Image: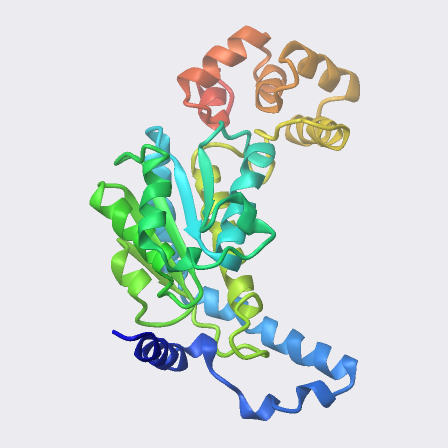
Length: 312
């Protein structure tokens, strides 16, 4: 195929995508007052949550499958290019402080490597081979999950990541913003959140990016809830790595137990600042080492550990 015919073919593919569609009614948007443009964008964004709602059963099925693998020691790996890749890296980077995940337990891969987070890396998104190499560098196993993320649903890096991962026996999820996408078709679990054409034609960092952020929030957060990383709606596995998080840790222990400040401080001191352990110390009236043992036996699930200690 010649370069000209390749570009013509790619142009035709993009023209057929909902996310790339041109909206003639917005052709004069640059002439509008700033407040009117803001209102337009706000109305556009308001439709995103409803589009996500239409995929909730698929998202839930994917989350249950992810949690099952992670409970056996598997990793959660996001793979995407451009905005989609950056959102995956963002979600992965927020898991250690929020849920105290271990090193490499949740990974974000972006086409072109870390430099692509701030600078576009020419041609990286077009390489399925690069995706395979990035996954091979992680020594991917059948216990892992790879979530390919692509607004168009046709980005070779994301499709290649899912295809390679599935061939290795890993669980695969394809998150796209167009119906009938190659990415969703390549994955065991396809999630297609169709948000429609963007305010700026083809600028998929807008509604499509917002939709992807919402779904990635669900995948990581609900998976961590299923893994026992929370107690009710409290982040009992939070890692207290700065003063704000240390203050949050004290507040979480207080909310979970109703204990006085002095008792909260004592429990945290007895558990080296581990919130979940401190809650168990206070609610089950056990010492620090016993809390560690009970949680180990309960695979980290606080409610299970409390039940084993005779507390509902």
